[in-house]
Each structure stands twice: as C-alpha cells, then as structure tokens.
Image (cartoon, rainbow, N blue to C red; front, top):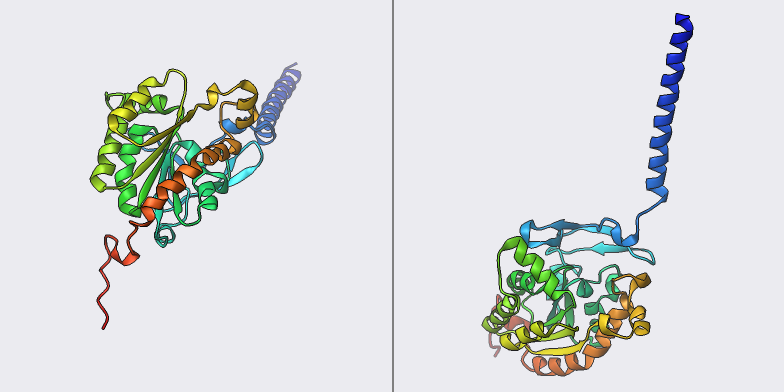
Length: 290
C-alpha cells in the first residue's frame, strides 16, 4: 500500500515537473518566434536622461526594428545619429537640423532621415542630424548649447512636429512648471545671442493656434504646413506605417519636398557669410605671406 502510494507521489511529481518544463519551453519558444509588434520592441542605445527624457547613448551601435526590416542605429560621440564629430567638422558649411523623431529618422534607415535627404538635394552644405524622439521645444533649448559648442554651425533648421505641445507638456511636468511658449523663447534667445540664423518648419494642426502665437511672440522665422493628421484620409495613409500613428519615410520625403526651395534660398545668404575654416572660432588666422 505504502509502496503504491510512494509510486503515485513520484509519478505525480514527475508529471508536475514535466508540465512546468513544458510550459517554460513553450513560453521560451513563444518569445523567440512570436515577436511583439515592431513599434513595441526595445529601441537599441536608447536610455532615459534623468528627468529630461530619452536620449541615445554615445558611440553605440544596435539593430532597430521597422515594419520592413531591421536597420542599423549607430550614434556618434554626442549620441547623434550621424558621422563622428571630426568628420562633421571637416565640412565648411554646417547646418544643424533639430527636431523630434521625424528628424532623427525614427524607424527608418539613416539615409532616409530628413537631414540626409536634404544633403542629397543640397550637397553644398552638410546637414547634421540632431533629431531626437520626443524632444519638444523645451528639450531643444536644453540640448542646443552643447550642440552649438561642438559643431559651430553656420545655421540651424528646426522641424517642429505635430506633437510639440505634448512633448513639452511631458518635459514641464517631469522637471518643473513652465509656460507654454518657454521652449520657443529660450531657443530664440540662444540663437540671437550666438548670432546663428534659424529657419523653422512647423506642421500646423487644428487647434494649434497657441503654438502659432508662440512662434510670433518669439519672433522666429518659420514656414507653416498642414499637419499630417489633417490631410484627407486617403492621402494621410500614404505617410503612415501600416495604418499606425507613426510617420513613414514617405512623410520625410514630403517634408523635404516642401522645404528644399526655402532652404536653398536661405542658404544663399549664409554662403556669403561663411568664414574660411581657419577663421572659425578656435582657429588661428593665417599669417600674411610675402
């Protein structure tokens, strides 16, 4: 009797262990073969910078999931999705391009980002990719001093996305109480102090009149375009990933299509003011030769 009872216990324990091992194996296989939606996967090199929000780790390389394929995400010394600093500084006419994930090239190859597309159309200048996802005007004002010091740009392009109010609201609530227009005003004060021309592009959506008022108050030079969310439904779907609320590379092309002529005209005035590399800050002027 006891022997049969012992055998029953052993058999029950064996079945339990087998069931647990089977569940663990199934769970492991599910994790391997059933991947989460591409927009929910972990983004390589991304980390939280205290209360300021996300940023990319410097000198980091990883693979980023997109609806089409995995693409390489590689950052330089300042955590930008661009060339190493020394290679950027070799270009005599450097334009710093700031904005959120639309500038960075969120879920796209680096060559399909807005700065890269501008560079392919306007090869006379180098457009530095300083885009960072979820970085609204307030975060841009915090990032700009270090970027200006590192790259000494002759001009700044600013693509303000449709989520500017939400991004700034998150930054304000995380750090401090701040006024709606504070980020725009701080950027305007900084570029005026550094005497760096700035040209901006803003996708104006329904109900964004307050942002428009901020641009006017800060006296920033902006071109206005219709927000993607306010386009006709059939047209809007061309610019979204899988009917998702994320812009695809076609949207970046549209942005550059609308901006190129304005940027070329703006650059024409900058080129005449661009100093010889030896006359930039941090370089000695050449001696007169006999």
